Amino acid sequence: MSTLQDAKSIARAYMSQFDAATSADRLKVLKSFASDDYAWRGMHPFHEQDSADAAITAFWHPYLAAFSAVQRREDVFLAGLNDCDDASSVWTCSMGHFLGLFDNPWLGIAPTGKITLLRYAEFHRIKDGKIAETALFCDILSVLSQAGQNPLPPQTGADFIHPGPRTHDGILLAEYPLEDGQKTLALVNRMASDISRANEILQGKRPGEVLTPHDEMARNWHEDMAWYGPTGIGATYTIDRYIEQHQGPFRTQLADRVFHGHVARIAEGNYCGFFGWPNLSVTPTGGYLGLPATNKPAPMRVVDVYRRDGDKLAENWVFIDILHFLNMQGLDVLGRLNVKRP
Image (tube, rainbow, N blue to C red):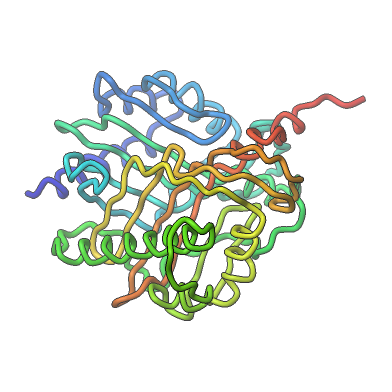
């Protein structure tokens, strides 16, 4: 069995046992799979936790106390060698939704008693047969939206529950040819390089031809690409609508983009996933997510999951720790929910 298949087996066994356990037993399950130096990352307000006990206390116990009968509805699963450390570490990526009944308050969000979906992307670093590190990104603002509590101005994209891959082939349990993942990774890296190049040309940091936004996108994306962004930004479809509803506001209302790199970037088959801590910093110049100009750089922690179709990208699921980004700008969304009013 290959290293990647070993990693998949460990991650699958962990998720199966963890998801089936009671809330009281989940710490025992996590400890049975976690290394002694296990580390966990989560979005605001959970941030970094330095042990299995801390991760369960910070995120899982409050979440499971608020949501009952929780199921993992997985859309994508892959494993890969990390492109960020010369392939010296192995990671897995699971993406989909946690489905549960919203029965008790969570983070100050009032319960609905109805089905509620929490979008998630969960990365595990597998080392010596154990889970050494986890990063769990989830869309808390989507829960607010489903509960009818929308703290931000109307978003530029569409607000709905995001589907999985159009091809329904995102759960990669078999062993896939390495060259397929390498092709996917090369395409994603080329796309990212094109974005950096365009930004540097526009900022006057390097010479070069300024392509139209459409021509720049069409080098790496199918015309009918789908982009599933986080709540607050929303989803969009086709190159032209993506430019209008996300790329345009992002490039014109945020300045001084500084890229910090990724913690993990993996690919297998037609799929690729990465995350950073943070990926980049940007400076709001006014209007983005309803914010005024702050002229203060703030970090963005981002997950991207991609599906390649042939020689171009077809779908992209994006998670951004928007609550953390807003908090760095002086807007504490969850704090406002928890303010006791007369």
